[in-house]
Length: 114
Length: 114
Image (cartoon, rainbow over all chains, first blue to last red; front, side, top):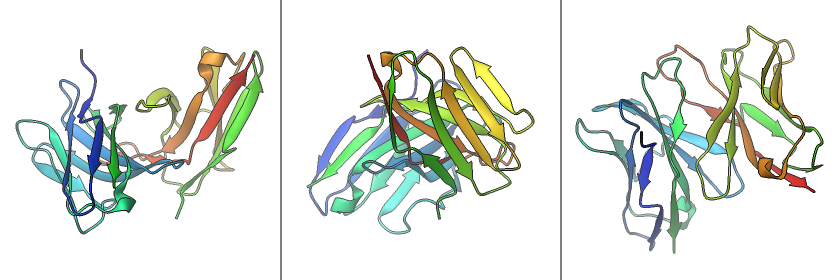
């Protein structure tokens, strides 16, 4: 049973470009959480999604960031017009029910903005 | 506002010794306290977790101690081994809320020396 998959694992973008990060949850999981880890810091919650619904986006910057989890396909975290401060590791986690269930993390996407 | 405070930031322990990492939380609504282990370049992996209805939980060499009145919990690693060298994160969430996003501590980099 494959775990949570994220791609790309490493992404380099120049300032002003767009970054698209993908997350495929574990089989049977319909709840996805995105977290951001800045260098030497802990993980910070960004957004929680279920299929076709954004449940909580309180941790996501209001501008330039968006997330989706379509009925078919992976969850996408999109960052428009990236800035150097967006450089971080972005992790997604999935769970089966979203209630009293373990979150399993992917290997992360390390975004570097030049 | 940091809702989960973790200490120490880094820890060096001799092989065979006991590693102790401490966390304190502010939000009394938290009722699920997991510890995650992260190796370089990897995503966090759940190590052990506790609910506040018990004061201690043990799994192999790993023990969580929980003090509800003090709003503190700690991870003890007995007989520490070089393979335990990793970054450890405590976290907290509210189970059954319909949104079980995790609030993480800032992490402890543990190094086990021979």
